[in-house]
Length: 142
Image 1 (tube, rainbow, N blue to C red):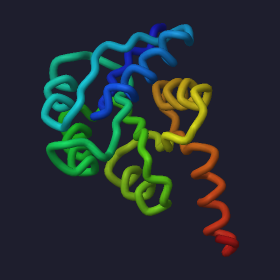
Image 2 (cartoon, rainbow, N blue to C red):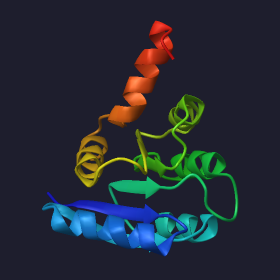
Image 3 (spheres, one colour):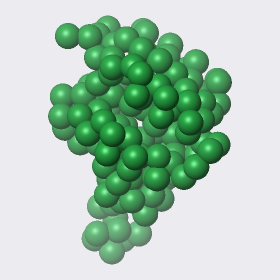
Image 4 (cartoon, rainbow, N blue to C red):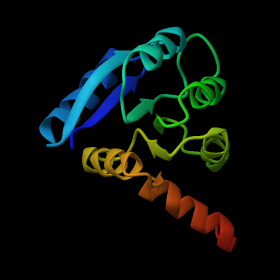
Protein backbone atom coordinates (compact mmCIF):
# COMPACT_ATOMS: atom_id res chain seq x y z
CA UNK A 1 0.00 0.00 0.00
CA UNK A 2 1.23 3.48 -0.84
CA UNK A 3 1.01 5.93 2.07
CA UNK A 4 -0.51 9.21 0.88
CA UNK A 5 1.02 12.17 2.69
CA UNK A 6 0.05 15.84 2.90
CA UNK A 7 2.73 18.37 3.89
CA UNK A 8 1.88 21.65 5.65
CA UNK A 9 4.78 24.00 6.36
CA UNK A 10 5.21 27.70 5.62
CA UNK A 11 8.80 27.29 4.40
CA UNK A 12 9.19 26.24 0.77
CA UNK A 13 12.62 24.79 1.46
CA UNK A 14 11.24 22.53 4.20
CA UNK A 15 8.36 21.33 2.01
CA UNK A 16 10.79 20.62 -0.83
CA UNK A 17 13.08 18.69 1.51
CA UNK A 18 10.25 16.63 2.96
CA UNK A 19 8.94 15.84 -0.51
CA UNK A 20 12.39 14.67 -1.63
CA UNK A 21 12.93 12.55 1.48
CA UNK A 22 9.60 10.79 0.97
CA UNK A 23 10.16 10.43 -2.79
CA UNK A 24 13.50 8.73 -2.14
CA UNK A 25 11.83 6.21 0.17
CA UNK A 26 9.54 3.60 -1.35
CA UNK A 27 5.85 3.41 -0.51
CA UNK A 28 5.04 7.11 -0.18
CA UNK A 29 3.14 9.59 -2.32
CA UNK A 30 3.02 13.30 -1.48
CA UNK A 31 -0.59 14.03 -2.41
CA UNK A 32 -0.50 17.78 -1.68
CA UNK A 33 1.20 20.67 0.07
CA UNK A 34 0.08 23.78 1.95
CA UNK A 35 1.89 26.83 3.30
CA UNK A 36 -0.55 28.35 5.82
CA UNK A 37 -3.50 27.42 8.02
CA UNK A 38 -6.24 28.27 5.49
CA UNK A 39 -4.62 26.35 2.64
CA UNK A 40 -3.96 23.42 5.00
CA UNK A 41 -7.66 23.20 5.87
CA UNK A 42 -8.62 23.41 2.20
CA UNK A 43 -6.09 20.70 1.33
CA UNK A 44 -7.25 18.36 4.09
CA UNK A 45 -10.88 18.83 3.05
CA UNK A 46 -10.22 18.17 -0.65
CA UNK A 47 -7.41 15.60 -0.77
CA UNK A 48 -7.65 12.06 0.59
CA UNK A 49 -4.55 11.08 2.55
CA UNK A 50 -3.34 8.81 5.33
CA UNK A 51 -0.97 11.24 7.08
CA UNK A 52 -0.65 15.01 7.41
CA UNK A 53 2.84 16.27 8.30
CA UNK A 54 2.01 19.53 10.10
CA UNK A 55 4.21 22.41 11.22
CA UNK A 56 2.81 24.07 14.35
CA UNK A 57 4.13 27.53 13.45
CA UNK A 58 2.41 28.68 10.28
CA UNK A 59 0.68 31.93 9.34
CA UNK A 60 -3.04 32.20 9.88
CA UNK A 61 -3.76 30.73 13.31
CA UNK A 62 -2.40 28.61 16.12
CA UNK A 63 -1.10 25.25 14.96
CA UNK A 64 -2.73 23.54 17.93
CA UNK A 65 -6.12 25.11 17.11
CA UNK A 66 -5.70 23.98 13.52
CA UNK A 67 -4.82 20.47 14.67
CA UNK A 68 -7.99 20.28 16.79
CA UNK A 69 -10.18 21.45 13.90
CA UNK A 70 -8.61 18.99 11.46
CA UNK A 71 -9.16 16.10 13.89
CA UNK A 72 -12.80 17.17 14.33
CA UNK A 73 -13.36 17.27 10.57
CA UNK A 74 -11.17 14.32 9.58
CA UNK A 75 -10.86 12.04 12.62
CA UNK A 76 -9.27 9.25 10.58
CA UNK A 77 -6.42 11.42 9.31
CA UNK A 78 -3.22 10.73 11.21
CA UNK A 79 -1.24 13.87 12.04
CA UNK A 80 2.52 13.94 12.50
CA UNK A 81 3.67 17.25 13.95
CA UNK A 82 7.03 18.35 12.55
CA UNK A 83 8.25 21.43 14.37
CA UNK A 84 11.20 23.43 15.63
CA UNK A 85 9.72 23.31 19.16
CA UNK A 86 11.72 20.73 21.10
CA UNK A 87 10.16 21.55 24.47
CA UNK A 88 8.13 18.85 26.20
CA UNK A 89 5.09 21.08 26.76
CA UNK A 90 4.61 21.55 23.00
CA UNK A 91 4.64 17.79 22.43
CA UNK A 92 2.22 17.22 25.30
CA UNK A 93 -0.20 19.83 23.94
CA UNK A 94 0.06 18.40 20.43
CA UNK A 95 -0.79 14.88 21.58
CA UNK A 96 -3.67 16.16 23.71
CA UNK A 97 -4.97 18.03 20.64
CA UNK A 98 -4.98 14.82 18.60
CA UNK A 99 -1.53 14.41 17.05
CA UNK A 100 -0.38 10.87 16.34
CA UNK A 101 3.30 11.77 16.34
CA UNK A 102 5.77 14.52 17.22
CA UNK A 103 9.04 15.04 15.42
CA UNK A 104 11.46 17.94 15.76
CA UNK A 105 13.04 19.47 12.67
CA UNK A 106 16.47 18.49 14.00
CA UNK A 107 15.58 14.83 13.35
CA UNK A 108 17.28 12.84 10.62
CA UNK A 109 15.50 12.08 7.37
CA UNK A 110 15.36 8.36 8.20
CA UNK A 111 13.43 9.23 11.33
CA UNK A 112 10.83 11.09 9.23
CA UNK A 113 10.25 7.98 7.12
CA UNK A 114 9.91 5.83 10.26
CA UNK A 115 7.55 8.31 11.89
CA UNK A 116 5.24 8.60 8.86
CA UNK A 117 5.16 4.82 8.50
CA UNK A 118 4.39 4.30 12.19
CA UNK A 119 1.56 6.85 12.42
CA UNK A 120 0.07 5.68 9.09
CA UNK A 121 -0.14 2.18 10.60
CA UNK A 122 -2.11 3.53 13.58
CA UNK A 123 0.76 3.87 16.02
CA UNK A 124 2.14 6.85 17.90
CA UNK A 125 5.59 8.30 17.36
CA UNK A 126 7.84 10.56 19.40
CA UNK A 127 11.24 11.59 18.08
CA UNK A 128 14.20 9.91 19.75
CA UNK A 129 15.43 13.26 21.08
CA UNK A 130 12.00 14.07 22.53
CA UNK A 131 11.66 10.62 24.10
CA UNK A 132 15.00 11.13 25.84
CA UNK A 133 13.83 14.51 27.19
CA UNK A 134 10.60 12.92 28.47
CA UNK A 135 12.58 10.19 30.23
CA UNK A 136 14.97 12.69 31.80
CA UNK A 137 12.10 14.85 33.04
CA UNK A 138 10.28 11.85 34.49
CA UNK A 139 13.40 10.59 36.25
CA UNK A 140 14.25 14.05 37.60
CA UNK A 141 17.51 14.39 35.66
CA UNK A 142 16.42 17.25 33.41
